[in-house]
Picture 1 (tube, rainbow, N blue to C red):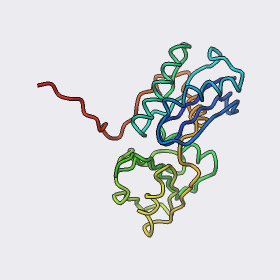
Picture 2 (picture 1 turned 135 degrees about the vertical axis):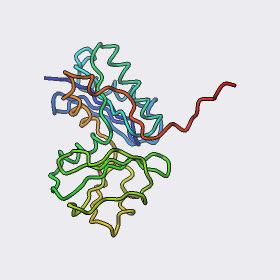
Picture 3 (picture 1 turned 180 degrees about the vertical axis):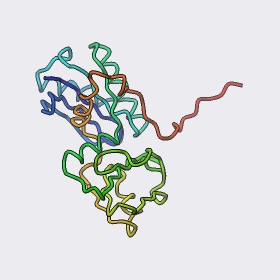
Length: 226
């Protein structure tokens, strides 16, 4: 059975899970705004020891690639790529939008007239937003925008489901425009889902590279030389 280690530090959480196919052998997750770089190595080690699995038994490493917080995102990607390199196994990158969307899709069936809005905190006025159809396909390109700028066409849609750690302001912005349902316990990516999604790319890792997915430029600007 395929063994995949899933890692997420892209948003306001830190999550590690060891998956054998769709069976979780061990996991460790917590919510945190910062400190993932200090917490992640110990969490990985704890999960591996809990499952009594050695690193060389892994078939690959799965990691969220964004969008999300710049610092947390880099922490997870750097750790996953370094670990994959050390054991000479593929490292698979999964978007935070796809991970959160898949978690809801696995939990419940979505009516064809309902859209799914995945909303991720950016620490700025804009929110990272992905809009999906009932079948999990993206209805529009991902964006970074203010909640009050979000427009959801009512054509063919009767309602929207909102998930992610920035779901509350989206729910407020859409109030009175369309029927909304906010699911409060799907806020940050789950490393179990990240690993499950990555399994589909083990034979073709070049289609899911562990490169950062940014929707806005970093705040820090490289000084220009005179």
